[in-house]
Image (tube, rainbow, N blue to C red; front, side, top):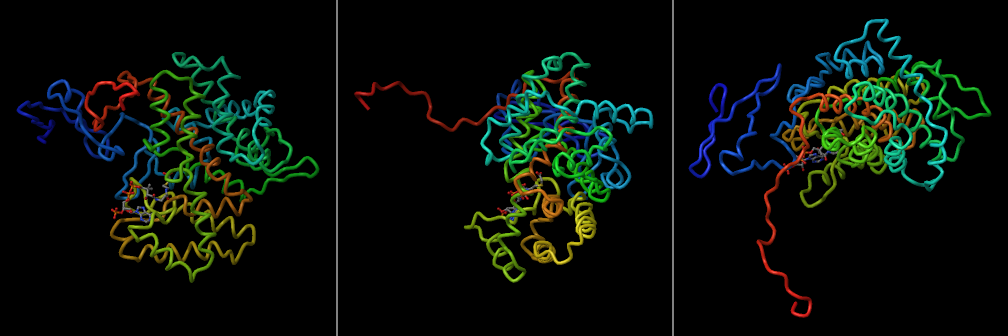
Length: 429
Ligand code: CMC
C-alpha cells in the first residue's frame, strides 16, 4: 500500500486501488473496481476487515475503549444528556438548542399512542411467547397501520416514521411485557418524561397510583442512552441491508429486532443473567472459568468479549456505576448475583486466558443485573435493548437512504459446492 493507493496484483493482472481517509480511524482501501480489473472478489467472513459504508454517526476505537456519537464521548452524553437529546443528536447530527429540544420532545411525546386496533394484534400471540417474538411481529405490522409514512423517497415521511418508531417503541415494548405477565395494557401519559412514561406503562396497574422514582427513571434513561447506537454492528447492518432494497422503515426495524435477538448480540444480557444465576455462588466460578477456556466446551462467559472492543467497553463502566445507584436506591445490599458478577469480573480481568484474548466485560454484563433490580424479567432485557437501539437503526437507515453512493446490498460468495453436473432421473439414482 502506498500513500494514497494500494497496488494489488492477481494472476498477472494489476490494479491500483485508491485509499480513503475518514476524520479519525484507519484508512480504507476502496476495492470497488477489483472485480472489474482482476476478476477476483475479496473474502472476509464476519466482515472483520470490511467497511460496508461511510457514516457520520458513531465512531468506536475498540483498542482505546472510545465511543463517540457525532463526536461526543458517550461518558459525557450519559452524564449530562437525556435519551431524547441523544436521539436528536443521532438523527440530526447536532445537539439541539433548548427550543429544538422542547419541540422534539413534544413531537415524540405526541406520537406515543399506538393505533387501538394494534392491541388486538397482541392477543393473537400465546401468553408464553417470548416478548422478542412479539416485538418482531408487532413492529413489522406497524407498516400495515401507518401507510402515510412508508414512502422512503419523501424526507418528511421518513422523519414522521422515525419519530413514530422512537415514540411508539416504549408503548409496544410495555404492551408486550403486560401481555406476557397477564396484566392490562397501560396507556402512555404524556406529561411524563420518556423513561418514566415507559416504567409507568410497565409497572403501573389500574388499581393503584403509580409514582415514578427519579433515580430509577434516570437509570432507565441512561440504559437507553448507552444502547442508542453502536455503528455497523450485526443488527444495524441488517437494517441497512434490508433498507437497501427500498423496504419500508417499519419492516427494516423489524429485521433489526430479529437480528438483535441472537445471544451473540442483544440476547447476551439475558444470557449473562441466566449464566450468573446458573453459577449461583462465588465458589463455583473456577468451574465456569475452566469451561470457558476449554476448547471442547461450547460454553462462553456471557457478557465478556466484543468484536470491536479489545479494551474495557466504555459503556460497561457507566453501566457498572448505574447498577450500584439502582441497587442502593432499592436497598438491595447483598445481592448474590452481584457478588458473583463482581468476583467473576475480578477473576476474568486477571486470568491469562482473558487478558491475552483481551476479553473485557461488555455492557451486557452489568445491564442484566440493573434491569432485574428494576423489576424486569430476563425475557424483557433484549426488548429494552431493541427499544433503545431503534434510534440508532433509524438514524443509520436515514443516512443510507440519503447517501448518493447507496445501492442494493449484495455480497458475493466463494462457491464451494458441486461443479455443474447433469440431472439424473429418480429411477437411475
Ligand atoms: N468466553 C470465553 N472465550 C471467549 C469469549 C467468551 N465470552 N469470547 C471470545 N472468546 C474467545 C474465543 O473462543 C476465541 O478464542 P480462540 O482465538 O482461541 O479461538 C477468541 O476469544 C476470539 O473470539 P471470537 O469468537 O473470534 O470473537 P468475535 O469477535 O467473533 O466474537 C463475541 C465476539 C461478542 C461474539 C464473543 O466475544 C462472545 O460470544 N461473547 C459472549 C457473548 C456476549 O457477551 N455478547 C455481547 C456483545 S456486546 C453487546 C452487543 O454487541 O450486542
